[in-house]
Length: 598
Image (cartoon, rainbow, N blue to C red; front, side):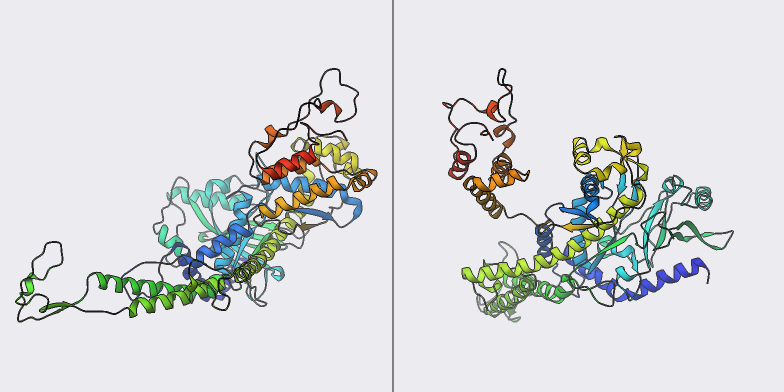
């Protein structure tokens, strides 16, 4: 078999391997946009969005903020390089903005992985006019073709489908792209005024795309072609399956990258990461997500609501029992001020009487379904006893148990997203170590770089020409591990944080011996910083106007640190409305305006 035959065979096998669950993905997507795909027994189209909402709320809690962690060198001799790497990672998180901001991409990675069971992302190296560094590009699940039967960590290849503009292809680096093929393809399309590749009838696409964007349009001025890229550890190949090279009677191969020695990407790594939804499988690339577990309950709830809506309509406009001998049928009309003709009013036309069984049945069944959905999501709705687990009730202890169950599932998702972030950061650090020979301007970091270089001489070898203009990796790249902080992405608990800082301030003020021991070791505690953080956690705005930089007054030079900032003793510390803040201000600032002398 030829190279292109092998590539196409891989893509088709992966698509067929995922055939069953790919159809289920359409059902899971329908739960997000509240669009019915189940066979409905009524014409009503009411949808309960509960399952999708549970997962959206979980994403907001678990992926509430950008991750925080540290690069840890495998050798203690590279401590300075690790601090430098941490500066780089922070800068790169700010600038990795393709598709969306870095935080939004992580939120989407968390949420959609739980919809489909897994989600994949490309981690490339980018060189643009405004940014040089690693990126993160989410891959639509419909464009993902993983190697069958194995987890991504053990895979030999992964195929991504996407659409590329011809004008974009013509601007690529000829060292990695086959420009002769690209130019031939561009000439053919221009000659034929080809509008590019649009979605074909046999393409597998999502329910959301079909519902929201059913029509596809091309553009002969800016045409796009659908391409597939197979990423192997030692080679990357990109081909346009729908575009046949007439000279060779095969699809155009647009790129073929040799990565046998890690020239393009760190050796032994695929540029792809994945995030599992809930339960990974041992033998398959895509596992089980909450939507799969809750699909039957969600569909049953929708059916129940719509059947009940039909009964409501029947109650408002009930069926009639009519005596045809004593009624003029044509006079029976619904509407205000209509007149019916009959011999015995109240007897000849009688509405069908229905008891309360329908409402009672609905309340019981609906409470059962919603309770099961909430139980699956580890959450509850205390506004109705029907939506609380009957085994627990609504006591304070029961509610604490419910919170614990929700926290347990949140922690599970936190572990899963942290694993994915770890995959991303490990690739980012490896890419930095492999690719920084081009030099990164140090002006991006300013004084931080000078402080690190003075404290840790091991980074001096990374400066270009031993100057201070740029740095680059010399010799063997340094290897790092990424240590994620506990709760690094979760929504902060402001009350707990306030109490923790309050306790820390109390400890500092009541432990002078401990502070002296720290100072003897060359360490200190920044009391104003603690106080400023407490002000922010209390929700006080404009803290910069409350705590300002100290100014040196004329005639006070040579005084001990902090003394020049101390106001006259007769100027008291102002009172704060919040008694907690006022008490802490008195403790931290010593009862006067300004920071006491050290």
